[in-house]
Image (cartoon, rainbow, N blue to C red; front, top):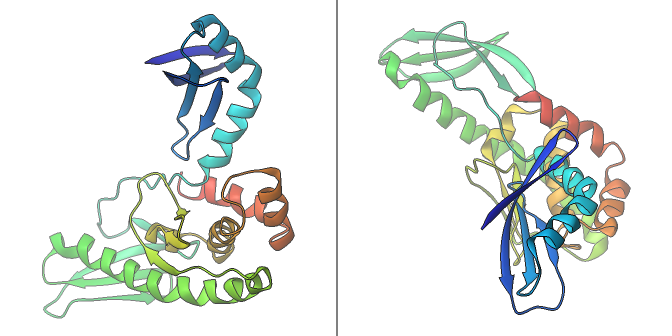
Length: 231
């Protein structure tokens, strides 16, 4: 069942589940959903009271996960439209030609296509290719830094994720959103560092945050850039 409370100007929606447990637990998911598990005899009033007490923490957690929610505006893939690559803005320059290609030319991403409707597919493939190349180059020095903790990712893979920039599976596989190739190098380093920290601390505890700060002192700056970049 879904319930709601008002906390100042903020509305907090939460999903409530009852089960045979002794205490009430609150979880904020990476998708910013609030999940509440409560003992079967807990009244809804008591649940809402607990949510209000924990509201500052809930809002803080939701804000924390906000940087992992890509917000790329819908594109039309026409000449003159701006597109990002490694944090820089480029204007799209589309030409119809028999030989298809995508190249950086000064302040332009020049796309030659056999027909204009192919521009999106061609540019997406170009981004994906560059994401594969750049992410591994950027990740390797960071992976080497974490060897002192005797951890290393099983692999780094790319996967489109509508609500995440990155994730780390229980068996140590790091998954990165190829959309990250549009962000500055510092933002990419932040997401990779964040996921490497999860190899040691699986949850966003204070120990996790302390480790992230130790390995990347200015991570908050890059987190904020990532939040604003593709908004």
